[in-house]
Amino acid sequence: MSSLDSALAALSSSAVMDIYKSLIGKEVSEKKLVWLSFKIGGITYGSPLGCFCWASQSAKAQTKQILWVTLGQKCQRMRSG
Image (cartoon, rainbow, N blue to C red):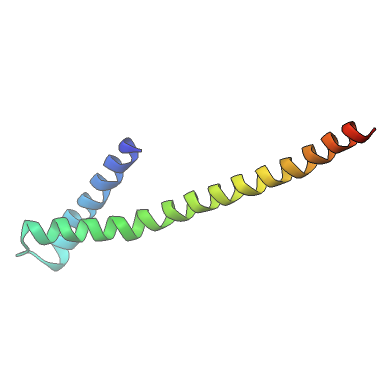
């Protein structure tokens, strides 16, 4: 995760430096640029990653439930038969 985090931080920082600073705000403090890159990265990359993690956990729970139902039925048949 730290490798992905570093790459995304560098990407949002370079986007802020290349786009925002050159087009919109030439006289902007470094503190504001860091804050802006944090916000852009959080919205642009954090939201999709959060949704992906939520979906994978949901799929994992559904798979576990399906396996439990199918294997549970087989175990009950073996016990009774």
